[in-house]
Amino acid sequence: MKTEYDFQEFCDIIERLRSENGCPWDREQTHDSLKNCMIEEAYEVVDGINQYTKSGDYDNLREELGDVLLQVVMHSQIAKEEGLFTVEEVIDEVARKMVRRHPHVFGDAIVEDSEGVLTTWEEIKKEEKKGKTVESGTLHVPISFPALLRAQKIVKKSNKIRNMAYTKEELFSRLHIEATKLQTLCQEGALLEKQKKAYGDFLYTLSNLGLALNIDAESCLTEKIQDEISKLESNMH
Image 1 (spheres, rainbow, N blue to C red):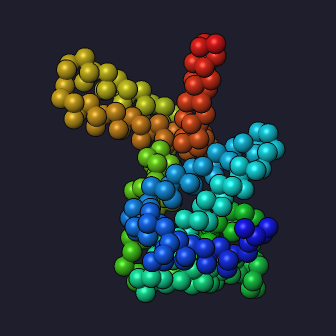
Image 2: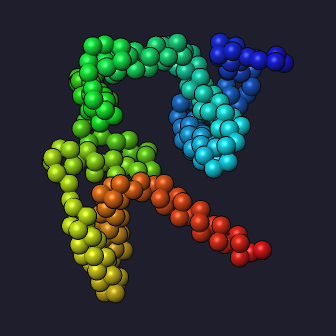
């Protein structure tokens, strides 16, 4: 084993694992079979970031970033075998995207602040998606996103389209109405489907309120769950 590997050598390792004389498990993998691996590894990176933020320990973050890179190279190798694209093309495309979407850095455009950067990014992104067959509508957010995260992204896009957003007071009022409706349906023994619909309305408005309060619903609930786990573990000792 070498003391240090570079990117090309890593790609060669993955290619060998996928070869006829490589690893049976790696050879069997497809884009579809690896979907959950990509999602799980992305969450592991987030956990690594949280650990680094709390303790300054970066070893786990470095390892988890490597696991995400493994997924990227694995998918690229599979695509290469299918005659679709190579990892070099993946890198070239994202590099071109970064240059194209940062005209204030690589061109003559002028932006005043981060908000201006995001506005320019979205305008260029919208122009790039014109005529493409992939789902890229104004309100498109991948269905594989966690529901709370997806809800807030949809709300944010909806607010831009309507050029307005509900106030905190309006959202608190809607929450009260929807909570009362859900309670009434439960007390009356309404069909489960009706209760689920009312509960969904409540959750969506709650996500909307989080956005109005500048609170990330996904991370907020994650932190709450972790607090509860800590309490339970504390009571067990």
